[in-house]
Image (cartoon, rainbow, N blue to C red; front, side):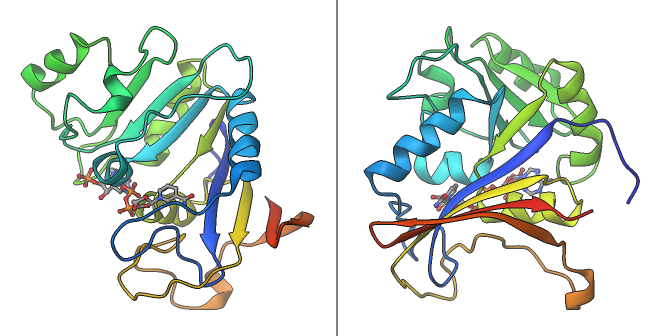
Length: 222
Ligand SMILES: NC(=O)c1ccc[n+]([C@@H]2O[C@H](COP(=O)([O-])OP(=O)(O)OC[C@H]3O[C@@H](n4cnc5c(N)ncnc54)[C@H](OP(=O)(O)O)[C@@H]3O)[C@@H](O)[C@H]2O)c1
C-alpha cells in the first residue's frame, strides 16, 4: 500500500480472552484500576485520542485525562454524516482543555457543520463516499499539528484502520474473562481478509502480566 504522510497511530484496547471489547449489551467495563491508570498515562503522551461514532453513541465517553498532570489533547470522533448528538459529553465536557475534532465526509450540509462549529467543534471533511476516507484524512490531521494518535476503537473503526494499514503500534490488555456472544463487539469487526496471507502483521515487543491481566505491546512489521 502506498505510504502517506500520517500521524503515528497506536491502537489501544482492553478485550476479553475471546477478543470482545464489549458484552452483547454493550458493557465495555473491562479494565481494572491499574489498567485505567496506564491508559490515562498513555493519553498524556499523545496529541490526540480517536474513536468512532459507535463508541460515542453507545458509551457517551468524556475522553478526558485523569490521574496525571497534562496539557490536554484533541478528541477526534469519526462520524461520516455528523449525526452524534450535539449534547454528547465529548462536545460539552471541558472544551477549553480538550478541543474536539469531528471528521466527516464532504457530503455534510454547511448548516449542520455551522451548528457544531458554534459549539467550538472543529470539523475536518474527508472524501465523498459513504464513510470518512481515512487515507485522505491522515495527512489532514498531520497538517493540523497532530503527530500521534491513540486509537481507542471501537471494532468497526479498528477494522478500517487495519484494512488501510494505518496502525503502527498496538497496546492491548487482556482481561481474564470470556463473555461470548456472536454479536458482542470484537476488537476488530468488518468483513475481514480472505486469507491469513493478507493479514496485517505485527511484532511482539513487550509482554507483561499482573493481577491475572496480560498486557501486550506490538509494532507493525513492515
Ligand atoms: N474495551 C475497549 O477498549 C473499547 C474501546 C472502544 C470502544 N469499545 C466498545 O466498542 C463498541 C463500539 O464499537 P462499534 O464497532 O460499534 O463502533 P465504532 O467503531 O466506535 O464506530 C463505528 C462508526 O464510525 C463511523 N465511521 C466513519 N467513518 C468510518 C470509517 N472509515 N470506518 C469505520 N467506521 C467509520 C461509522 O458510522 P457512520 O457510517 O454513521 O459514520 C461506523 O459505524 C462500544 O460498545 C464500545 O463500548 C470498547
